Length: 170
Image 1 (cartoon, rainbow, N blue to C red):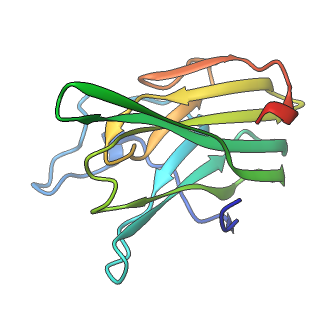
Image 2: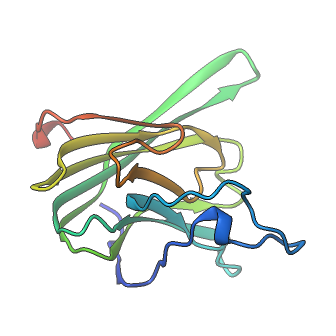
């Protein structure tokens, strides 16, 4: 089990149409008034050790009983052979409060740059039910993304299914 880290009220949600890019224009021309219930935030790189932390942020309005995270992904060897990476249980948190963020992964800017990495989350919640959430794979690890919107839609390139609780196999 990796180092557990909890942060309260750290990550404020700002819709893309309200964010301003480096040239002074909004990042999206299409207003989006949905609010995320569950999302992932990637922190900026720690320049001393070249690592980024990935946080699961609960803004569902209710506490989450259990959050378990692991990572998936792959890398290729000489473009011929694919090696799959699966880690079923890397971080485990109980009683994640509303507006609380918990660390679910750590990426190294250099060592992880050649790997296609994604996240798998297992959520147990009275409000949301038991969910298995999988992100897409991305070279070097995924960035900030919405997992679940307030209208029940999954985030872009996110898969959500019902989780048949079997914690002993995680």
